[in-house]
Image (cartoon, rainbow, N blue to C red; front, side):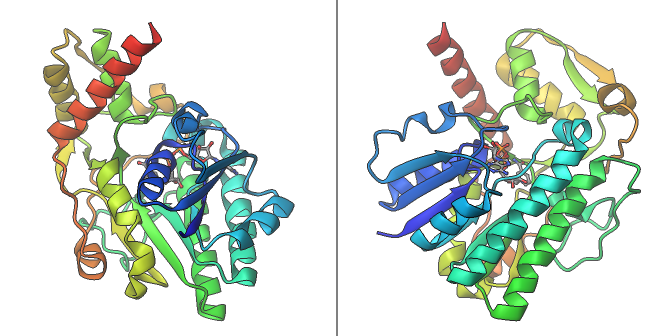
Length: 326
Ligand SMILES: NC(=O)c1ccc[n+]([C@@H]2O[C@H](COP(=O)([O-])OP(=O)(O)OC[C@H]3O[C@@H](n4cnc5c(N)ncnc54)[C@H](O)[C@@H]3O)[C@@H](O)[C@H]2O)c1
């Protein structure tokens, strides 16, 4: 049995990763401060003897000094997440992301515990050179636009982790996740699909930011977990940055229409300017598609689940949750 430490394990992706590892028969410790994650996401594992959770911040040095050496591998997912949260709380965004990764990778280096960092497609910034390949140059917006604080902090995380690999040969894996969606994701911090589905269920307007023509690709969390579980056993992936996501593109306006149709809702689209949605300090990019050649070559991975199926899964999950809570 292998032992895994997951920071951010009570979050959306983290809790699915916990499930994947426990199903494989591994032992899992979660460290999560429940800042955006919830106990509910991991409550179902509480009685599993191969599971333990520590509710604390992963930047507590003494805690990670104690915990990291007890494990064979660290999945570092803890991070401020979600455009709305990042715009509203820029100080925490930058400080907590960088501090946590800095402490964690330092401790991993000392105890020689391999680390996987979940980075983000946001680091591609304003580039219009789609599809985005991992070694492409990057164009980030002005520092006065708060949105770019997240991309820059995650980029610094990548530099730090790669620097440890370069200087001490620590096995590290950097995953640039593109929009990941599925059951358990909350719309509270600005994630578009749960926000649209919840509005459609209530027959409320679906608020589309900008002109709705911006295009995105959405990957099933179950496909993402399959990829995350492959890194450790792919030695060629060590010291590499690899995109994980879907390349099925859709505009946000079309996405809203699709959700209304699937949910059989009476909702209408309501267009809202970025300024109105996020206040001053927002910048957006028109398209964001991953180049998935590296993921295919190194991990033999590609996304399988189509968008309609993903939306249906989330819709069914949300309906079940609603009925359960009544
Ligand atoms: N969901 C996506 O579409 C997406 C896209 C790109 C990258 N990512 C990355 O994937 C990871 C997981 O994201 P998610 O979508 O599951 O978000 P999430 O908010 O559900 O999960 C993040 C978790 O980290 C916890 N956390 C935050 N700071 C912490 C700290 N200092 N110590 C301990 N716990 C802390 C939160 O409570 C939460 O449970 C993040 O690193 C994020 O940057 C996600």
